[in-house]
Image (tube, rainbow, N blue to C red):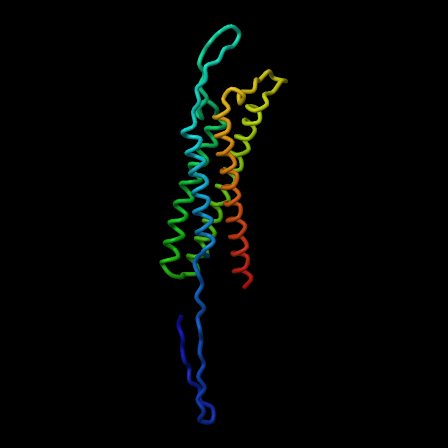
Length: 197
C-alpha cells in the first residue's frame, strides 16, 4: 500500500492530502479451493475407470466362454477417461498458475489477461467434461437396459461391479464438471464487476 503526501499552502496553512492505492488480490481463495476440488474429482474418476475391469464366465447359446469388461473396449468410455485425465491435468496446471500469480504481486494488465485466458480454458474443459459425461451416461443407459429396437442386450446384469464403478466415476465427473461451471460463472461475474467499477 503506497501513500503520498502533498503539501499545499493557502494563507500559510498546510493541508496534507493522502493518496491511497488500493491493492487488489490476483485471484480469490475460493478459486484455489474450487480448482483443487475439480482436480480431486476428475482424478478419482479417472483412476476408478482406469483400473476397472471385470471378467465373467458366460454360458450363451450352448457355449461357455469368458468375457471381460474394460474401459478400452468402448469408445465413449475411452472418451470419458481421456477427458477426465485432461481436466485433471489442466486443473493441476491452473492451480499452479493461480498460486504463482497470487505470490508474484499485482499487475492489473497481466492479471486481467490471465483471468481471461484461465476463464476461457475453464469453459473449454467444462464443455469437454459435460460432453464426455453425456456420452458415458448414454452408453451406461444402454448397458443397463439394452435396446430392443436394435437388438442390443443389456450387459450390466452380467458385469454389475464394472457398471457400478463406472456409475460412481460418472457421478464424480458430473460434480467435477459442475465445479468448472461454477468457476466460469464466478470468473465472468468477477470480470464484469472489475469492468463496471
